[in-house]
Length: 242
Ligand SMILES: Nc1ncnc2c1ncn2[C@@H]1O[C@H](COP(=O)(O)OP(=O)(O)OP(=O)(O)O)[C@@H](O)[C@H]1O
Image (tube, rainbow, N blue to C red; front, side, top):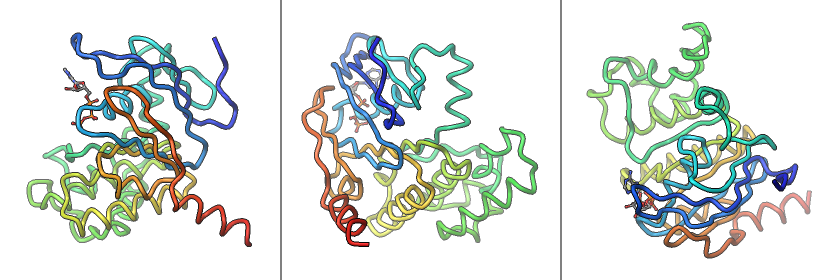
């Protein structure tokens, strides 16, 4: 077994996965550096969701390896994998899946409440992220009383509240109008950068992918390219000139 490079937070080698015989990943390898925002870009059905599910330990690839901070994820027993996901990873779905019986702030605070953080501290953490996402006023409402863009912001707050080491965002703005999408995307990427979170962003949209430091393109479950974005080059130039 080849050990992953030390500076890669997430490292995967030769991932293969098929859903009921239908191939989704056909040998994808990648590394994501600490604090890097990596976009995985490809058309519908190219394998983006399956890749993020394998990297985040939701799915065990049928072949290949996934490592987090130089420890194997693919070989962890289910309970340990689940714990790793809850404690170190955040996840944003394209469509928000909120608990209908809980208020917006309770939904956003769930990762902290599940970790045993006190209700008062969890509420303060959730409200802080909800304010940043411009939905502080909706804190006491239940999901059915919120419009889609508000629901998605609650889901984003829930993914960020535990300050995960790695944030996985699967088409996080696909279901939003363009103005809402731009705001949510800006907030998520700003949060990732300010908290040194590593982020893996799946998108079919090259414009969305341009917020990342690097874009990895996939097609039919295979990696077809990896390029640094102008945004990353701009940031590198700024840090050199300081
Ligand atoms: N649960 C499943 N059962 C059967 N086939 C699946 C399942 N999930 C994904 N697939 C198939 O695997 C392939 C890759 O799907 P995946 O969702 O990973 O791609 P994607 O790039 O995220 O697409 P999209 O943008 O449409 O979500 C597709 O052919 C898809 O139909």
